[in-house]
Image 1: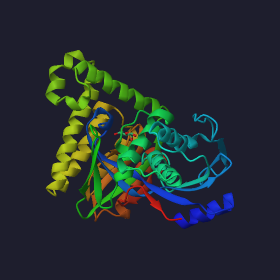
Image 2: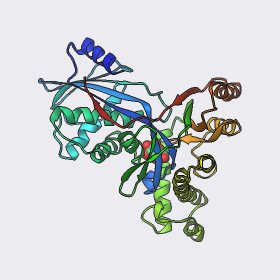
Image 3: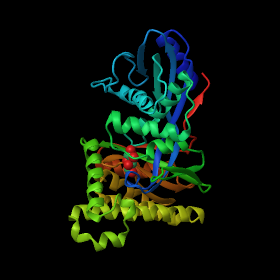
Image 4: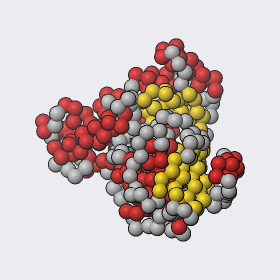
Length: 382
Ligand code: GLA
């Protein structure tokens, strides 16, 4: 993708890029909606993502294009940084990163030519937005000579998403895209946040099944769940749900509506599942890990209510298949993709059987991605 991107940059802008940077997409391994509640979460960077090519201009123009949307959008560097609407609204990710640079007191590049490319499937919930934010931030910092720590890089990406794009997400997506490491999971204690990695047991594989369904109100529903969690924490008398335990929720159940009880139970149980997953990974007990992944999905289904019939169908079909350790929706929910953790013996034929059953039921096939873990965001030489 890298040298082809340089060539396309040359063709589009008539000169070579000064810098290339890449950042991966991510799988949410376990820890569903725990991040913005101050809990722990485990994710994996994958071997696909976004690459950004960039060269400075001295006329104060910021020109943006992407392989997926090749028409060039121009924003004057003089103009105040404000979100764009319409077909060029994807530029809000790099613009949001520039706004975050300003908020962090970092030097911003004035004019530039920018070209992005992605090999992440769209709408699968593999965090193309975090990938474009981090790749853009690394490229911008290179142009202005700013040296970002990995922690700052990740926080800048989240700042762009929270304050410019307007999604109240936690730190999972950017944290995993920034701290990813091949053959490892990223563990985030979201209270710090503190980032670390955990070795993935040898011989496990990830399969992603993208339903291509996306609830029309997905952004609104995510924000609604966020609000419900904050309301539940307030009713429980804690600053965030990570400070509550299952018995605390049970004892104070009468202070919460049935709906808020469910949301709180999902989050406090999920925090315990993440901790149990860490322990099982360290003990090399992969069947317990798989059972915890599937239990997380069941909780999304019944308590957090962020699953869909398509996602549930895939999880049911996968966990009934041989060589599958566990399966769950990955990411925010309300559509998107299911990920399965499998042994080496799960193969294309096994995946095709699940896809065929899905097609019979819903009339269109899911996209299948057999993916590997990958490394976190980095600069590439042009
Ligand atoms: C989305 C958000 C993350 C996280 C997950 C759910 O991916 O961007 O911050 O909240 O949903 O766990």
